[in-house]
Image 1 (cartoon, rainbow, N blue to C red):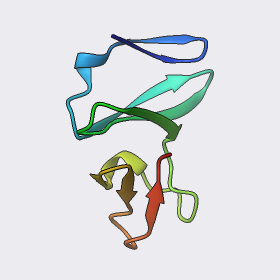
Image 2 (cartoon, rainbow, N blue to C red):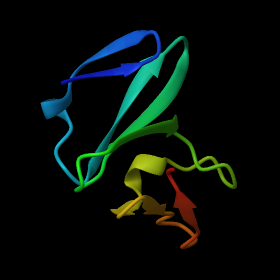
Image 3 (cartoon, one colour):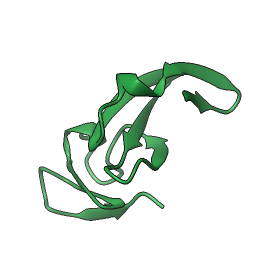
Length: 77
C-alpha cells in the first residue's frame, strides 16, 4: 500500500511501523501520518494546536494521540 495525502504520493506504507507516526512536508506544511496498530492510517497537522509542539512525539493508542506536554487527548478520526 502507498500512503497519499491527496493528491500527494508520500511513499510505501511499510515506512511507517504499526503504532507510529512520521512527518511529511506537503505543499510547504508539515503533515503527521499515523499508522495505528489496527492498520488504519490517519493524517493531520504535525503540530499540536495548543502550543505548537510536535504531534508525532505524542503517545499513540487506538485512534488517539496524547500530547506529551499536557496530556491532552486528540481523536485522529
